[in-house]
Image 1: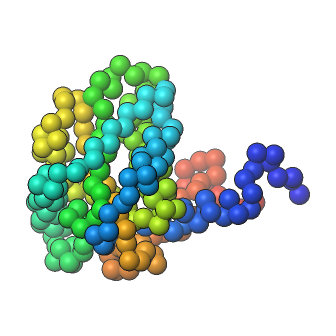
Image 2: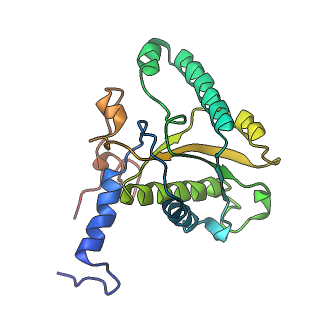
Image 3: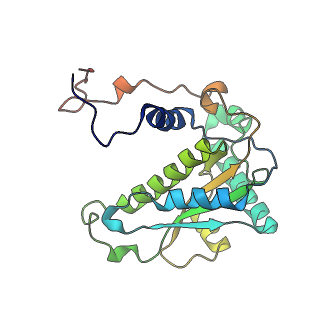
Length: 222
């Protein structure tokens, strides 16, 4: 049996990390209790500590404190919700019954965006330019896990037309919104992903996604 790595966290610390990962949920139901400023800024610092290719830090986080602006963002999401329902055909009615956002109810709304001027960052992106988007996703995940550890819910909303949201937020040319993040207190966390609880889909098992050496060669735990 191999000995524990010397830099390993304590058992309790490791359990807390894995618990946050396991219990993270894409939340849609919030109560109106506000998030205190120290907690919010702890979460923002967690997001900013995310890894980024070439240390380019392409994320920008826009805090939506204007209620009128929040309502307009909600309207953008609703517009795309209806367009998505139309594109789903026979599942349209089923989709429209799902709650897909908490923009008006949550304590805080953040818009995560890609910065402008990203073309000058070549390190790690010459053949994979999309690594800037991957870096922003890492920042969002950091925020999500930190929020769960704080007992706060977060929901990632992707139902919006990027150019319309960029115009609404006066983003410069080259910048692009990636996510509307609903953050706030919840009465309870879902016991499983909401889309499973609502019967929309079922998550698949890890073994279907891990290959051994070559594509579709199943890997088994050793």
